[in-house]
Image (cartoon, rainbow, N blue to C red; front, top):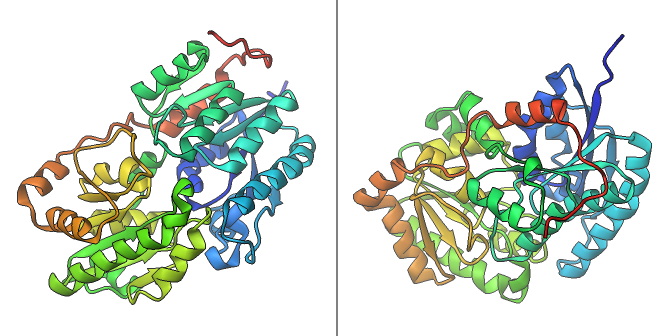
Length: 385
């Protein structure tokens, strides 16, 4: 008798969640006990953000459903985000009913993932959530915890996150410490040299390299222009005085993101809409500093010992390695922090020795083993308060 495979439906909204989900999706694809289903939505479908759906297809994944929730002409505000989540709820109700997964796999802190978790609970489908329990002090944290409350299986990246999820009332038997899946990619890819990357992205291999990636903080959206201008002012000063170079990547499409992209495009700094994740990791490996407020500065950077300048409040409360300098939205303070990251030998040495608190090895393999073999808990959640 042929064993029936468990169908696992993955949701991906943008490049950030896809880069983390990809190793797990690959492992599910190769599993004899699991079948991969994939719903692609959000920024992946937008031309002005690189239409990264093509990247997913080029990686060899069959897309079972596409669900547009944004348009290139959307307003740059919270109303658009709320409407997008509403569209995700409406569309996923039909698509999940059609695909009939055994488990919906959602992650992190994005609106489409919360919509997927809500749909799963209402349709009596088990929900798995990865990297819950983390804190950041922004709206992302609230969405992340909300996903946790709709989920049945919890794959966490750190011991503190595991404890926090149990404190939220979740059954500890279904809280699994597996680490961050993006770190699997760091261990297994072939890296490009600095000369190869310089040729591909128009860089000077003889200059120090800064990667810049800054997203809006939705609770501070009215200050997004002053914030990005302070950061860009600092980068221009550093590039001029220290003869460094910066490669900047487009912001995400949260409220305020379009304003950041507009400022980047007129800044005179080298800007790209999207960088394939493997190239991004190669750039991190050869870069001298990462600047901005991306979660890459928290989750991935310490695996490379990369000095990182974390600007503002977006990553406020996250666990982090010893490679990070925290700074506010003030150009003079940012300049000092970047100088420390580039030239302070003691700090650079400390950064190189930094341990990554999210690294627990072979995350995808652990997750797939659990997905394939775990006895699923009752759909009706009993909260342990």
